[in-house]
Length: 116
Image 1 (cartoon, rainbow, N blue to C red):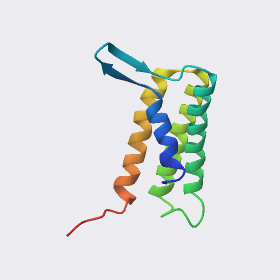
Image 2 (tube, rainbow, N blue to C red):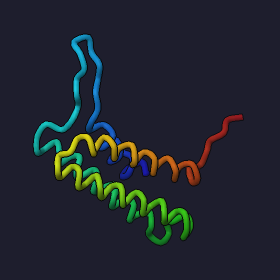
Image 3 (cartoon, rainbow, N blue to C red):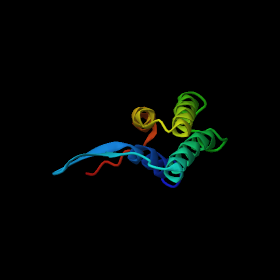
């Protein structure tokens, strides 16, 4: 997660947004082919990360874990297509969908650290 999926998700999440400054609203989005390629490659990494999560020895179970992994692959595939179209609005929306997929899985499977 920390070495593959999380860094790739961070790229997609950080690719599109806005910042309010004293001079107004600054829109953030990939501005050229190279920047769009970075987003596309991150989305590909997310899709492949979903595949890796389903491998024997990595899958926590054969039910919900596989469904969550497939959900990641599905939304990442849509992000790949959006990056190829250079569709910043779709990347923004899909970033939220990726977050929802990740959060649903973490809710069930992430180990919680409880301090005494």
